[in-house]
Structures are given as C-alpha cells and as structure tokens.
Amino acid sequence: MSANSWHDFRDRASQKPARIVLADGMDERVVAAAADAKRQNIADPVLIGSRQIISPLWKRHFKSDDAPVIDPGTLNAQEQDRYTTELRSIHKFKTLTLEEARARIQDPLVFGCLYTKGKQADGFIGGATRTTGDTLKAVFSIIGLAPHTSTLFGFFLIEPRHPSKGQSF
Image (cartoon, rainbow, N blue to C red; front, side, top):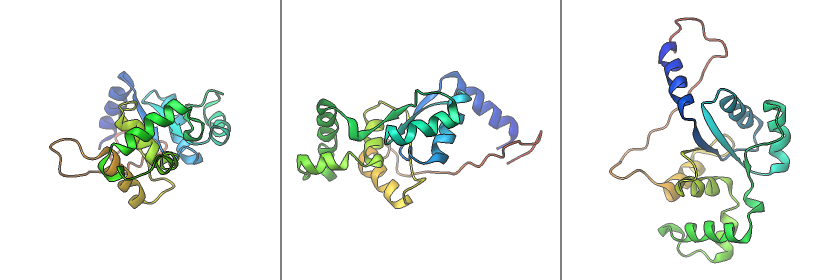
C-alpha cells in the first residue's frame, strides 16, 4: 500500500468513523491504539473490560475522563438476559445453562463478538492478549462468516510513526 493510498484510506475512514469493539481493552497498547484512532477520527472505539483499569489508561493516552468502555461485569439484569439469550440461541451454545451462559459473556472475546453480531458495532478486533485460536474460535462460533463467504481473511498492518514522503509499505 503506498503512502497516498494509506492517506486515502484515512480520509475515507474519517468521513464516517466505524464503531469498532476492542476485546483486549485492558491492554495499554490497545488503549493507546484506540486513543490514536479516536484522535484521528478514523474509528469510534469501544474498549471491553474493567472501567477501573481502562479509564486511567484512556486518560493517559486521550486526556479525557470519558473512556469508551463496556464492562461485561457491570451489565444490569436486562442486559445480561439479552446477551445470554443471544449466546444460547447460537447452535454451539444451546446446551449451556443460564449460569454457564452468564459466565461466558464475561469473557471479553465472547462479549465483543455478541456485541458486534447484535449490530451494536461495525467491527471487532481481538487477539492482542489472547491466542489466535481463542480469538478465531469466538469469532467463528458467534459471528461466523458473512453469507456466501467461504474464506476468512485477516491481516496485520504496521505503520511507521513518521513515514517518509513517497514511501511504500
């Protein structure tokens, strides 16, 4: 991707920032990346995890007290019921008891996938603190592939801090 293409991507992204769920929201690297994306207006991040852990990290990187956090541990009864019902409606999780399903939605990967599947977010990112296997298992079993899609595609994007003019990646 050329430097110009990268800037075009950023321009298009800033036209309508996507709401992106970050399952590894308690990792400082993820919080820093989320703050960068928010500052550059290329994404509207949602960090999954403990507000007590994430808020100070967010303030360090974004200089704002209003961290975009969803803590599965603080869901009210109605929200817990909604997510456990959604999880138990998925074939792989039909045999879970209510208590088992409530425990599973505490996992940021599971919760993030359910949040995305419920169209509350435009995209999901995970795997900074968990294995690729754990991340893919959650994505495949909860979100799945788009209709008429048979291949999963993923990638890493590494951007230099100060790309030189005309540099190709």
